[in-house]
Image (cartoon, rainbow, N blue to C red; front, side, top):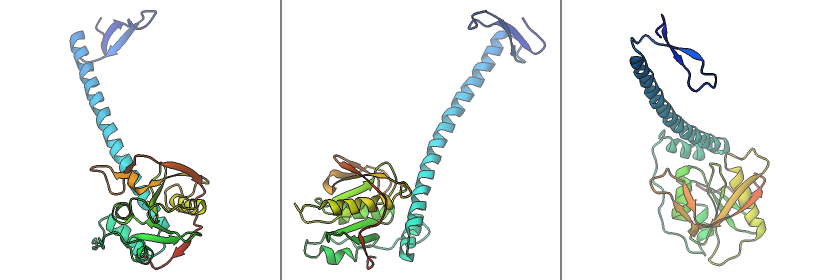
Amino acid sequence: MRTASGFLVTDHYDPEQRVIEIPTSAATPQQAAAEYFQRYRKAKQGARVIAERRAVIERELEELRRLQGRVEAADALPTLAHIARDLGLAPSGEHSAAGRPTPTSRRKDAARIPGVYHFRSSDGFDILVGKSAEDNERLTFRVAAPHDIWLHAADYPGSHVIIRRTKGQAVPPRTLLEAAQLAAFFSQARHSSKVVVTYTERKFVSKIPRSKPGLVRLSEFRSLTVEPKITAERVLTEG
């Protein structure tokens, strides 16, 4: 039945089959149905666009949070310069792409690797921490040897951390703990009381194709839970 503002119809989804009014300016029920179906299609399309846009914004926010973490962790102008390069605010300088050092020269060369914080564990192992996403990728795939130990805060953006060692050399638990604490500290979870850190040999780390710098997948790994803090000795001669 037509009313001044729409049609009266029976609500067949109502157990009591009550009559409701459908507001519309259409001349016939068929036209009203077509009008509402068109609104539904527009709303459905709008919801899809909103969901896609939300996903893009969430990715951008994640990237901004990662950069915020890098800035908060920065303690020197060279570090801020690396961050500016990531943002495209400064020219990207050429970094050395020299081959991996021999075991006898690795410690001497560690201090000259650009884009890393250099620490030394209580047991004398060199620990390298990436300063930015690009530095993480360089550290993991161009500096670290396959048998080095790789660490990263689980489920949080953060630095790649490398424990350098000779092939087959055992890493003492204290060194592993200190490196894991660094991985937790140089991540977005640094203000948490406890952080889960994954670790594995570098050979089990691979880059995700067509992904942003620093994003990786692990074919096998172990985990430990640590407090984010710096307990290893800082070596202040890195690039």
